[in-house]
Image 1: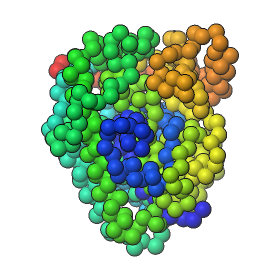
Image 2 (image 1 turned 180 degrees about the vertical axis):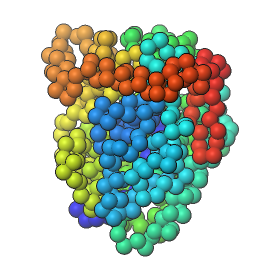
Image 3 (image 1 turned 135 degrees about the vertical axis):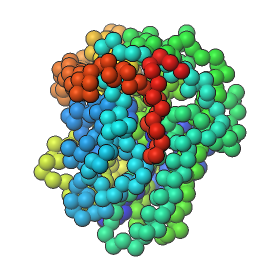
Image 4 (image 1 turned 90 degrees about the vertical axis):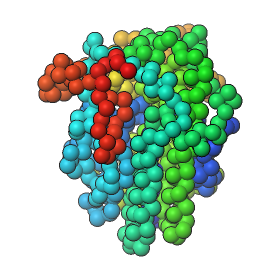
Amino acid sequence: MQQTNMLYIISDQHNRNLLGCYGHPVVQTPNLDRLSEQGTRFTNAYTNCPICVPARASLATGRYVHQIGNWDNGHPYIGDTPSWHHRLRAQGFNATSIGKLHFKGQGTDHGFTEEIEPLNVVDGTGDVLGCIREQPPFRNKRPGIREAGPGDSTYLQYDQRNADNAIKWLQEHRHDEKPWCLFLSFVCPHPPYISPPDAYDIYDPNELPMPPQWRTEDWPDHPAMDYFRRFFTFDPQFPEAIVRQLNAAYYGVCTYLDQQIGRVLNTLDELGLTNTTRLIYTTDHGEHLGGRGIYGKFTMHEESAAVPFLMAGPDVPAGKVVETPVSLVDSFPTILEAVGAQQTEEDADLPGESLWSIAQEENRDRTVFSEYHAIGAQNGAYMLRNQKYKYIYHVNNPPQLFDTIDDPEECRDLAQSPDHREILENFERELRDLLDPEVVDTRAKASQREMIESLGGEEAIIHRGAFDNSPVPGEAPKFRQHGTE
């Protein structure tokens, strides 16, 4: 495969279904849709952990969360495990990041050649309050849901600057002789659920399709889901008008994000770089939008764990749809191959595969993996997903099994079905070949307790308070005491 530039565009918390190219009947994402038409769309792509910091550490290193110990939003990547950016920089390639990283920051070398206006975790530690897994203080997320609607936010402003910075960078590097990799990371459509008024006005809240199982009577009856709803104070259900207004705001931010990406794609065209640049678009995890009574990510349901994944550029099949399951750990070998960098002997055991090869192949069955050890969960959860089934193993709680072809909205849990007992047992064997779920759960909780003690203990962490969203560069975090509005 010929060496080319690599533009890797990632957003934050973009529900996979909220793109026109994924079949959504209402949302307007013309620039991403154009990228899909010009390239290849993956229908079964997944995060390796449905929350920001672990997902981004996993993408950087090409390794699973339990292998690198970035368990939650209080365990940021510190550059200790080699990343694809380390590999590129060591081999003389320019690996630049623009925008959100959610790494440690604080002068840490994360492996990039340059970091332009990076958004990293608060104070180099992040949300350590989320490390308290036993009798934790609950969070009240209701105010941010009620306040959803049109307006302005520092996140909207930041993403315009991220696009501005990317355009400037491309102009400055248009004549580089050696291939480069630009990691362009937008923070939208992550909450706050505040949309630019012109984008919000595109959508009539009363005409939007509603997320699966959003009504109380349809909420899935599973202990892990019940706990999420109690932990974040999502119960009782919000009035339908509020759910619809939040969805309209989120749709508006998705359109705004698409507009910023469009500005960057147009610049590639104008500079004559399109034919020498491979592109990827994805996100770190999804968003429930009130589905199952959840707002945010956190779970292994499709709206949270599935991610959009688009590829385009030289040697990428145009207009192709790939059903082979993939995940974010596949990014490491994919990026290296694009620019012509080499993996080292240390990378031989990476679990990912190059997606350039998968894009060229016929669809095949493959199992991808995700895990969760973070805020709102009493115990670890692990997902295995092949072309037909999704299996979720919950430590100390019943497993779940969904037929994602016959039941794409995952409304029928087959885990107790006698007809699916063998499938369930095979999945558990496959999971235990990968790891011991109970041992990993114990290890995660021990690491989290160590982090808490290193920062002064639970009382000090609780006194520090919580913040809903990581501030953009130059913005002070807005701490509040748990349970308050």
